[in-house]
Every structure is written in structure tokens, then in C-alpha cells.
Image 1 (cartoon, rainbow, N blue to C red):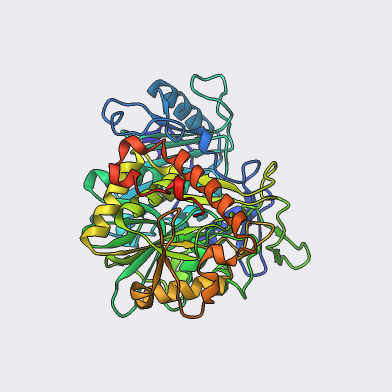
Image 2 (spheres, rainbow, N blue to C red):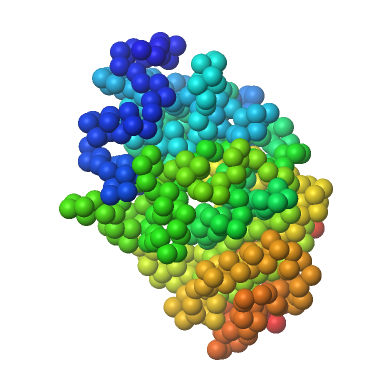
Amino acid sequence: MFDLSQYEIDVKNVMRNASPAALYEEALRYEKHATLSNTGALIAYSGDKTGRSPKDKRIVKHPESTDDVWWGTVNIGLEESTFCVNRERAIDYLNTRERLYVLDAFAGWDPKYRIKVRVICARPYHALFMHNMLIRPTREELADFGEPDCVILNAGAFPANRYTSGMTSKTSVDLSLEKREVVILGTQYAGEMKKAVFTLMNYLMPRSEVLPMHCSATADSSTGQSSVLFGLSGTGKTTLSADPKRELIGDDEHCWTDEGVFNIEGGCYAKAIYLTREAEPQIFDALRYGAVLENVVYDQADHHVDFANASITENTRGAYPIEYIPNAKIPCIAGHPTDVIFLTCDAFGVLPPVSRLTPDQAEYHFISGYTAKVAGTEVGVTEPEATFSPCFGGPFLVWHPGKYAQLLSKRITDHNANVWLINTGWSGGAYGEGSRMKLAYTRAILDAIHAGTLKDAPTEKESCFGLDVVTRCPNVPDKMLVPRQTWADPTAYDTTAMKLAELFHNNFKTYADGVRQSVRDAGPLLQNAGA
């Protein structure tokens, strides 16, 4: 029995760092509806919540950190007394369980910066998920683990009390930066644990002048130099990082230090909707024994997963250890990036397939964190809708976005990295008229960037956003590289470009006070929009 008395938990049956086989056995015996896919992955369901609940995230207000936190809609303050109430509620629930699962593991592959994380949960599916997502210690490291730097108390099956001060629903994900504790109530979505760790790293790392990044990263196998790809959900961050020609460092969370980059996680958490072996063979084949498939629909006869079925949620996911990717670079550490790449899915069809950014433009577009939703993906969305998430990871930031942007700018300048903006969205018109950029073209652009071909490629200055548009790229038709030329009606392009420029301009007002004037001036020139 593993002793949890320091958390006032007294449960006799506690499994610590159980093997995937043991957690499979536990899940199949005790999890409601848990089963196996025909490839051996554990299929589990998160209940009512099939995605994160960012509006229910809270950070405890404390004198030691209150001046560092970017308070507002992203970081909603919580009184310490309320945190204690929720913590007590979570512990009371965990004490009612007949069995608990404890995982001790690491966040951060670089030993200089890694933290020790302890997860205490009541569902074997959650334990296996975090076993995959954190860095698995050796037996020797586990025996010498000691006290953790962060503890997650996951009582997600038990609701928060809506009448408790500061609560607005039955869901609450509370983080105490001083106690280094996370309390989860009212949601069983496994991704809340993963992102709670990332949020803590987003607070701790900048204090050491290290840049935490919501990005994927790959490395050149011969030079060890890396590139990083930022992008919101649906832009291709995970898909494009699964590149057999390069080594995978990680698909989602990294840090950039004075020595290079390292992955925070020990696994990948890929969107599974519409997944096919033909389009994404590495990810498809990774969803086997040891992996977790979350909220998917399967055939009752042979347990074949229907990846095109979104009847439970569009946000179907697969979590697997990074070593399931054949070309993973382990340990997940690499040299400084030669290229920093921002991915955007522009459903307005305005932004070019690839353009080169200046350092000030890099800060501007990093802080903007733009992509777009398309009609049909959410109720009420009938035309392209701009989405801005600062630093391409707004829900996980703790400091003001300007803090992360300054760290990025310094790293780019110090290491002479190239910065690129790639549009994986629409060409030849907005959604409904144009067509989605072919994945083959985007991969060709990335190949050219990594080969150094685009560094000296011809460019054309775009007048609205001030972008240096690359006009020639191997294996991409020249006519596709300048957006205005792909539209049947150039006047309609001009009107749409103006609309998008205004959206950028209005969004950036929120962050303008925290950045340099030269960065503010690096945005679109509204008077030139469409010219």
C-alpha cells in the first residue's frame, strides 16, 4: 500500500505507477464502458465533458505571485479559502473510493528544469493517460523520487458546489502556484491534467528566463538542430510534426532554454477525428496496445474504431508514449531552432501559404495567435470566424503575453532563427468558395524551409499585412503562393483582406500596453488593406 496520509487520504488499495497491463485490467474491470480497440488500445469515455473547461479554471490569489499573474478571463482569481474548500471536497471524495491510482513521473526532459509530478486519481484510464503523457521514471528514479514538486488531486467525477464563493458551475480546475497543487472537480476529461501541468510550467519557466511554448518540434537527424511549429487546434501542429524525414521531439509542449529545446511531455495527444493510415500513418499506427483512445465510436462486432464518427464529440483523441513514433528523438532534447514556424488555418483565404516575418512581426503574430473556425464546426457559426489565442496557447498562459513574446524575440535574435507564417487554410477564396490547402503542398513548404531553400527564395511585399510573401517554392504551384492572384474576384479579396486586418487590429488592442511600439507597428496597415 502506498501511503497517502499526508493528503489526509486513507484508502487501503492504492496502486502506484502500475504497468499499462495492470491498468488495462483495472479499467476493464471497474471502468464503465471501457473496452479494447481491435488494435489493442484502451477505449475510455470522459463522460459529459469531452473537452477542456477553460472558463472554469481558477488560480489562487497569493501575495507571492499576484503581481506576476495576468489576471482576467484567462486567469480568474480564486480566494485561498475557496481553494481549501474544493481541496477538502476532492479529498473527501477520494476517501470514499475502494481503490486509487498514483502516478509519479516527470515533466521536462532536461534534468536542469524538470519537475516531479504526482497524480492521485480514482480512474485507471486517467492513470494510464498520464503514464503516457508524462515522462516515465526508471525503477531507480522512482525508488528515489522523494517529494513531488506538483500534486494533482483528480476528483473529477465529483462536482464542485456551485454555491461556494467563486464557483460558477459544477466544474472547477483550481491551481495553487504556491502549494503547487491542482484540484479537479466536475470534469473527467483527461486533458485537464495534462494542461494543468503545462500551466504550471508556463508560470515557473519564465522565472528562469526559459520560454515555455505551445508548439510541436522536430530535429534534423544529422545536425541536431530543431524547428518549432506553433499552431492552434486544427492547424496541423501534430500532423506536420509526424514527419518521417525528421526526428520528433514532441507534438505539443516545449521549452526553449539557453542550451536548446526540450519536450515537457513523454507522449503525444493527437486528435483522432477523421484519422486514416493513408494521411497520418505514424499517428494511426501509434494507437495500439498501451495507448488510450478517448470518446471514440467503435463497431461492436470487431471493435474497429470509426474515426469519422463524431456522434460523441469532434474532439476524439488518442494518447500514446512518444516512443511509439518510430523516429522519436529520445531523450526529447535538441539544439536551438533554425526555424520558428507559425501555423494558421485562415478560412478567409487571405493569408499566403508561406511568408517570412521580421522579429517585430514575429512578436506581433505570436501575441495574436490567429486561426479561424469554419461554418458547421460549431452551432451558430455560419461563415469564417476569426479566433485569436495569445502565444498560440492563451488558456495556459500565466504571465502577460508580452512576457513570452519578449522571450521568444530574444531567442530568435540571439540564435538567428528564421521565422515563417504558414497558412494551412483556404486558397482561391474563403471557406465555401475556395479550397483547403493540400497537405502535400504544406509538407513541401516545410521541406523547403528545413532544406534552407526558402531562406533565399524570391519574395513579394504584401501591402496589407506587410508580409514578405514567398513567391517560389519547390513542388508548390507558383500561382498558389500569392493569394490575391488565386481569387476569381480580386475586389472580393480586397474586401475580405480589409475585414481580417480590422479583426487583427481590434484584437491586438488588448495586449498593446504590454509590448514595444515597434511591435504594435508590425501589424496590418488598415489604410493599405487590399491595395
